[in-house]
Image 1: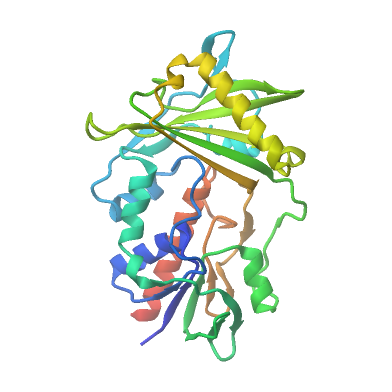
Image 2: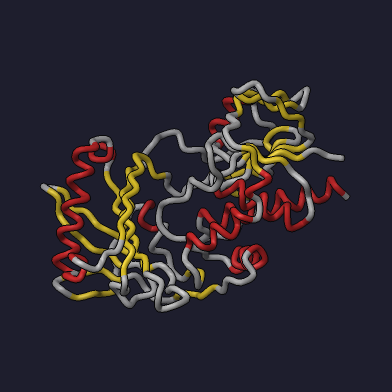
Length: 336
């Protein structure tokens, strides 16, 4: 029997694991932290392609998906107007149009996917070496795992570093310069929604001499009146600001003050708040390759590589799920 390993229990790993599990393909998952699916904490589950929605419908049969054609809106001079400004790559990931969104919250969808494979991943397994000849994965704690086929569902750069062999597949257009920005995610849990728009809104505000923008995203409506609403506010920062934690804290306070001026109900409405700060938010600029099998029997799965025939206008979620499906199909052929 073939031995299949999934390295990385983030969102990509659990998505691939869910597809394999549903197909009846046994695998062992390894995750370096104490829980799976923890690397998604920034924004909204936003899908652009019909085929991607089809995959998610198969994994989460009780969740429906709504197509959003409404344009993003921006606050100017006390009014919400259709947004026409040029925005940076990080912002555009949450401003694309049209797109699909689930009828349930992102957290509920992700929990459904994680719960289907939670028992199939081992925690605190930090991979430090992959021996392609012996087909063995070595972890920092001394544990070893044999494999016939391996799906790498983590950072692409760390894979090439661990294997220390030149990939057999050429990867085009790899970014050499790090232009990524930092990001703030303010999640508010509310009794009532702040805005009635289906797409994102852009809320400009100032901090010192900086002109900043908060992107507001309504999460899906709750199933019952007893449940609360969630509103996400995202702000992207230049590296000089993002690397100064004191400045980041002041920016958060400035943003909340301006939001309370615009939405007075925020002074009393929030039931809970959660702030997530990421010093580095990756832009959506995948490299191209002709195959996901970078080394013999070792597949990369994730949004950093798209195959040459991938559909245009795909979001990172679209690319990730498309890659998961392709690897699932390849592994299914080896079990036949």
